[in-house]
Each structure stands twice: as C-alpha cells, then as structure tokens.
Image 1: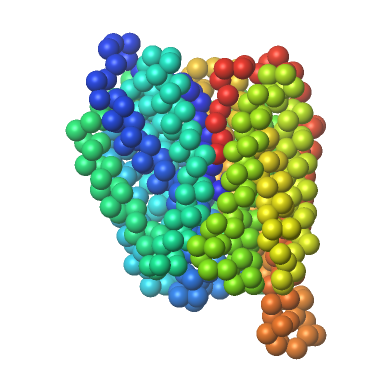
Image 2: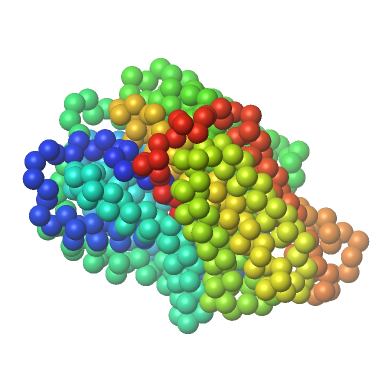
Length: 497
C-alpha cells in the first residue's frame, strides 16, 4: 500500500550495546512509533485531500501527481543516504533533525499558495523523512537488545507501518471534510513538537564507528535520474511521447541512472552495494517490489478521484471507501505468515500478483454509477488480498541470507524500491490517464455528460495499466526467483503494511 515500509528485526546493524537495557526504552519506543506513523501516514493522507488541493491551487491534471511523487521520489531516492547519515552522524541527532525538518516542510505545504510551493514542500518532507525513518529503525535496534523484547518492539513498529496507511486515509477524510485540506499537512506540526519534546530527554544517542565517508555523488545522481524520468513522463502527458522535451528528460534519466551504477561500482563506500542486487532471488524480489509499487500507487490516486469526482463521495466517505484494500492486506499478511513455511515464498508471491491483478482488472469495469457493495468493495478486497500474499514473502526473500554488514542497505533498498516504483508508476499512469481523457473527448461535444464519461474512461485505462504492471511483477517472480521453501526462515518474517 502507499507508504508501506519494510522492517526486519535486527536488520540494520545499529551497533547495539551489550550492556544493560535502557531503563526508559518502552517510553522511547512510543516516541519512535509516533515518528513512524507520521512518515507512513503522510504517504496516504494527501490522497484524500488532493482533489480539493488541486482545485484550490489550480494544479493541472498532468501535474497533480507531483503531490505524491515529489514525496516518494525524495524519500526513496535519499533513503539509503539517510541511513548512512544516521549511523555516522548520530541516530538521535538525525532523528531530531529529521523530525524538525519534517514539521517545517509540513508547515510550508500547509501554507502553500501555488502548486509549485506544495510540490517543493512535499519533496522536503520526503527528504527529511529519509533521515527520520532509518534513524528511528536504527534506534530500535540500540534500545532493544534482548531477543524477546526486540520482537515485541518490532511488532509495535510493524503494526504502525501496517495501520498507518489506513489511518492516513481516515484522518485525511476527517480533516479535509471538517477542517481544510491544508490540515492534512499542518497536523504534523503539533505531533512533531510532542515527539521532539519527549525524544530529547528519553532517547539515547548512538552512532557507528570506523570509516564514515558518504556516497553523496551516488545519492545526488540517482535522485536526479529518477526526477528526470518522472518529469519526462509528465511532459509526455502535456506534449506527447515524441516531443523533444519528453525524449530529452527520459534519456537524461536513463543516462544518470547508468552513471549511478558506474559510481557504485567504483565507490569504496557505495550507497547501494551492487552485490545486494546481483543475487538472483534478491534481485527478483527488488524488481517485483518496484513493479508492484508502480502499479499500486497510481491506482490509489485514481480510485480517490473516482470516489470524490465521479461518485461525489465526501472526503470522509472516500477515506472509508478505500479501507477494504487495507483489510484485505492485513488478512492475507496473517495467512501468508502461516503458509510461507509450508509453501515457500515463490508460490505465494505469484498467486498474490495474480490476485492483485484480478482485483485491478475488476476496477477497469467501473462506470459513472458503479455500485460500491457489489463491485468496488469486492474488487478492493481481492486487490488487498493479493498484495498481502505478495508483500510478506517478498520482504523475507529480499532480506534472507544478507550478510550482516549489508543488512541495513538491503532493508533500505527494499523500502526504496517501493517508493521509487510508486513514483514512476504514478507519473506513468497519470500520463496514460490524461492522454486517454483527451483522446476520448476528440469529436465529442464538451458537455458535462461527456466530460464525466471521459474521466471514467481515463480511470479505466489507468487501472488497466496498473494491472499490467502487477502482471509483470508476477512474471518477474516466476522467471527470476528460484528460492526453495526451506530457504525461508520461519521466525524472521518481515512485516509489510
């Protein structure tokens, strides 16, 4: 789901102390959990607010996806660097700076007077979130060194990750309907202030020792490459796929990403050690994660607009109407945890992708008055079940067998692939949507009936492409993943929300 995060107990080697446990670790856990909720929640809370924000700030259909992708691109592109900074600069210090910056960026977004100002604020939120999330995760490994306690702490952290998306949808609906869409961002300010006030006296400082060089060139180049790709997709919606600007930005993005690979190969301290990707099973899991994110994030964006613009749901109703996917994910995640030791990762991931694609294909059959209970509800539940059966084994597959010194990078990479896939997918699906709407209106009278029909046609096209991306994810699993069921540990399942 949008904003999902992956965590593995003990994955980031935070250099946990072997001494006595910190006496106020459980209170500190509450502070860390609040920060995690804020980061996850912000990936979905703006979905419900976006129709009103778009109208208020005069954002075009082609550009509205930047409200989502500016956040996910910055978050995903800088996440690996954020983890390194937290380890070397100090996890508590990074946590405080990340929380403060996130609150200030939220204030900027809540006070935005133009679309560009909102996009910039969302990018800043993502950048500071890339500091905040890995610092919080690393702090858990420092605070909880005993196995049983650590399992409980990560269960709390994982539950926040899993429920955060649903909370974001509901809270976004409440704030948009009863206050203003701006409060979907401004609400972070008091939350961050409370978290900082408790973190300063309660959370201990810790840092890794040894060589502390950062791969800043790698972080800059990979983020610039991804932004260029997304901007190229956006220009395609405005100018067409054969336009000079479209081709230029897409080509520049590809060149920059190729340059990133070269930098990583030559760097003594790479941001992303390529040996992590070269393992066949792990590489297949990362590719699947990227494609699932690409198909899913965009679909949620269009489902929100369909609920509010076509079906005329109020924001809170739209938030509630989006919850069946979360319910499906949570049900399937529990089932997958039980089935994985017996069936292995690959069968569950393939079956999950097939189920999710079926749910998405059912959404391609929507109309201007599609009933919720008999069509939209079951489609979303099936989509959620498919995602749940995919996420849990995918997460374990991506992290099992990783050497200890690469565990943090592998965990962050899994998180980053979901965010980056979501960024690229949202931009790509939005381009297909705007092109489909424009093509539908050619030769038709520009009356309200045809306008609404054009929107629904665009949503159907976007859902169809989302289904295609999820099918590609299933094929990637089928072709690349060769893992046996005995390769998957039964006690180290990674939670996915």
